[in-house]
Length: 381
Image 1 (cartoon, rainbow, N blue to C red):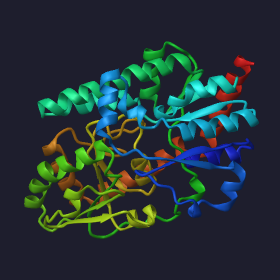
Image 2 (cartoon, rainbow, N blue to C red):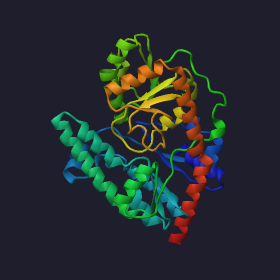
Image 3 (cartoon, rainbow, N blue to C red):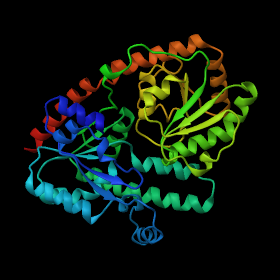
Image 4 (cartoon, helix red, strand yellow):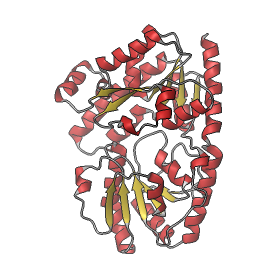
């Protein structure tokens, strides 16, 4: 979101930002650059996303999405209403599906076309979670979460004026769901000028993973990797190190006592952290959209092993830009292969960086986006 906002500002557009600060992702407003604050007049509303038994039961009785209900508060609706009553906008962009819970407020106080910036097809994530769940009681509840979220998402798609998907795959799926042509794919963009010019790779190969661990697909993947893959890797490569970084580490990870696994938790600088390691593992089995950390690691020239779901949204060639592993044995084989072949690690890293430079240049992506927005505004005028 930050990359897109900055891209729009640099392209000469005026942007106003209303955001949430949650107990799950609290915002330290003192860390926001003063220039960004001034240009966006960014405002925050605090929302408590803590799980509630009563809230879950009420959503169950009313057959409504509990995921969405947690994001709807009177405070945010009031703040949004005030902004729309005092300012006029050419276009309103909703970030992620959950912000669409305020669509009725927007329609009441603004005539601007509304676009959904879809980071994922949200109900597909929970469909995969339900399919992968082994516990029969949890599986039933996950099926309910999937169905109510799908009902909400499909209704939203009927009411908005356009969709900005984050991958071509999501864009095609949205076209099937919505039967509308006002859909475009704009992947995650990187300001290439900010990338380090000279890539440095450590001499000794090591593994790393970066991901927020209160996002279920990340936690699910790492739990599987440590339980299924790591024991086999440790037998073949007893000296190999695995480092895990990211915010909100689950309790079972913070007390993890496994040989050669280090849980680093939140890190102050992702780029500096990635410089220490050579091979990134991303075991993902649910989720849609694009994995930003994979794009960043590719830009940093790292060799990456992931699943087809993890690499979704990236125009990769398996074996040229990264390695795709489909099961635990494939992950083990890929790790051993990269550990023993520095030339392959370096080649994958160079190819990955070149791909990001060609297809994820933020300036080019913002030009494509604003062309789409101008046409959408023209259609609705």
